[in-house]
Every structure is written in structure tokens, then in C-alpha cells.
Length: 348
Image 1: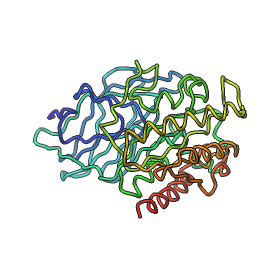
Image 2: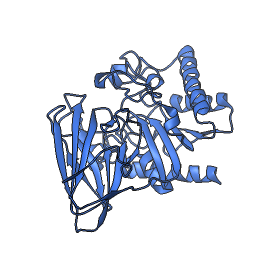
Image 3: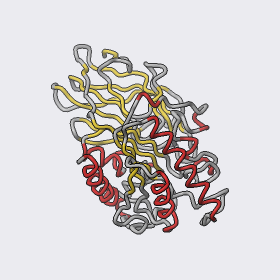
Image 4: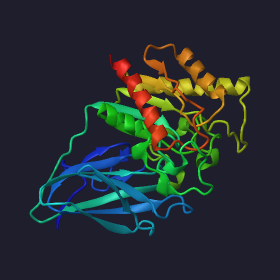
């Protein structure tokens, strides 16, 4: 087999990926991916997987689309061990392949190498010109989306990563409908403010994670993201679902002072992003997962306070009312169609 380095110009990347070591890129965020074309029938991928969550870390899988057909690559449960995954294509012609991270920070992985047949070649699979970014929580990161037997129903009692697939989050589906790139800056359980939500038992909120590359303390030191590496045209900000959990207490209704802190922090993040992305349009929303109306009202208040023609408010038709469990693929599609139409109107 002929080795292809991860730094080869034929390999295209999408997402917040640590490429400080060009031949050992590290993938943290959901739906971060690499893609290329190759000739021949056999492709080998060598990587190291690192489980952050020992309870749910076994049985993790990468998503793969080979010549338009989607399947999975199962990762070894041996933490940090180098493993080689073999992909078999149909026929000797040119094939296109895309490999992505299905889950959020439950694990990270390092791409160590690619190999094709001795006489085969690799070539770039270009990314679209239009660029999106979506900040959000488990709905935006595609948690539970493949549990399609439970549309409109609660989740199963015990969490399992096998139902997660960021590829079918409403943000990723919208990117497909618009033929756009996507950075999926989303994490299950995260809330806006540090000290609230479920991610890291509330220790890390979006106010800490939004500008990070590595954002999971168990995965290593938190590292800053270089915003110059990707400047989106449209930014979706869908945070607020988990914010009712404060200091480990569930169903906390914010008083006037807490509401002001939340609005001020949201506006502070938006202001920073607007400076980093000076031409981007921002869309503020929540999702169809059930939540109290107070959070919709607070997002309304953020939009009013920002008072910018670059900041827009989208309420999905069934926002906060559709399902007590995570949205499955049909409900994610519902949101994607509405978001796509909204962005198309903004584009004119």
C-alpha cells in the first residue's frame, strides 16, 4: 500500500480541527470531517481514538459516505491505540469518500495516515463556497437522531451513542440543502453560561466553549480557536435548551437578575462573533425539543437588544412543542427545511 500523509493537499478538511501537527490532525467537534477522491478498490485509514466518557465510550463509530452510500466505521475500544480501518470500494474507478465524527466530545480521534494501492492516486474533493456555522447543544449536534422508532416520544432510559449522528442534525441537513460547508460548534448538554446545563456537570458553558478548539477538559488543555481559519456567511445560534439547570438544580426559572445576566452574556458572545465575522448574518433560534416559553422570550430580548440588521430571529413552527425527547431524523428535517427557507429569504 502507498501511504498518503494527512497533510497532503488532496485531503480536504471541514470543521474545527487541530492541525497544529499537520500529519496528526485531531478531531474534537461533531461533524468535523475529511474527504478526498481515490482510485482503486482498497482504502486504509489509520487513527487513534480517545474516549473521554468511559461509561459510553465503547462502540463509538465514525460516519462514512463512499460513492454516495453511507455506513459506519467501528472504532476500537482500546483507548489511544493505533488502529487501521479498511474500506472496500466497488470497482477500480475513481471513488469519493467522506469520513466524519458522528458524536460530540464523548471522544476525540487523531488521523495518523491514509493508504491506497501502490499504483493508485488520491485527489481533492472540493468543499462548497457558501459557509455556515451552527452553535448549539445536543439537538444541533445530532444526539439520538437515529432512534426513529421514537419520533415524538421520550428518549430511551439509558443513553447509547449508537443513535447519535451529527450528519442528520438540522444544521448539517440545512448545509446539504444549501450546498454549503458547515462548522458544527455544538455540544450535548451545554448551556449558555458556565455553571449551568449538563455538559461537564455544568462547569463549561458556551461562553467558555464558543471560541475554543479543544473545549473538553478531559480531552486536554482548553485551546483557543483561530477564527481567521473559517469565516462563515451565516451563523445559527441555538442555545437555551439546557439553561434551566443551574448549579445542579433542575427546572430553575430565572429571576429578573438571572435573566439580565443571561441576555448580557448572549449579547457579549454575539458581539464578539460579529466582530470576528464582519459580513456574516446571525440567526437566533431554539429547537422543537420541548422547553418553557421563558427561553423563547429571552432569545427575543437578545435580538431586540442587539438591534442589528445582521441579527435575525427564527422561531420554528413547532419550537418548544414537538417532542419531549430529542428530535429524530424526521423532526430534524422539519427544522432544516424551515431554516433553509429562512436563509434563502435572507440571501434574496
